Image 1 (cartoon, rainbow, N blue to C red):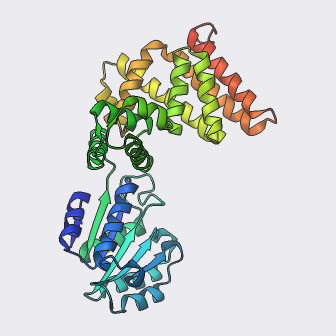
Image 2: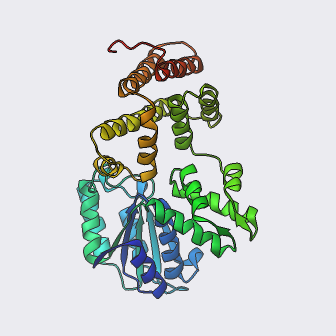
Length: 354
């Protein structure tokens, strides 16, 4: 019947214009969770306890699903069935054929919902994987498919301001921007943080000071700050950011890979700038979600020569090898690598290819 966006999906739910089967997936998990919750509430008329049957997609029993689909609703408008995180790639073609048959033969008073929040249907690519695409295409023909595309930076900031206003609080755009950056656009974390800020503000203005004092920076933000401290030759700040990462119990592999990723951003920006390319060009070419990541890289890359950025990346590669093959203390190896990168960034360490 349809492939629609989240705005249209929410509108149909409000109007009570329901289809028989739904498939929700995409990068914005918060939107998927919200749409699923609203649809279940509408289909069951708020009587989830009596009218909702839920299945874990990892252990789906198609025969049990078929039996549930044949049930008649007793105390709600629809017999609602919710299957969470069904990955078609994990099941046989025979089971999928049986599942398709169930979807095709749903009664008029049954609503079946597939929602995906724990894995990437596209597996990092542009299109869904083969079996998941078969399921999506099938549901698109007989029901409704909705992909929750990750909101842009301005859209997220605007939604935070709107939420704050509904809670009786004012928040300027620059404060919303600061909150998005502090959480690196993580919509799940942002939902929790804006609720906390509204409760604290209690009907008053949400300020940048509140954001800085009450919102813990994300791991990604802390990693970015660590890389920035190295480039800016702020030794104390670099070690403080490393302390924060350990306090967050961040895995060493994530730290090394994330810091390396931050330096790759700098190298790309440096190369783009020297080739008379713009930040917009870089964002498009490499598919960055948020422009502030690219703009910050363009700003900071001019503080260091590209040869020295490459040398810092090389230090991180050596660090990962030592962490995986040496019995030396992990924290000492990390701190040694940071000091070495600071020496490289400052120009005090001579490079082999200088």
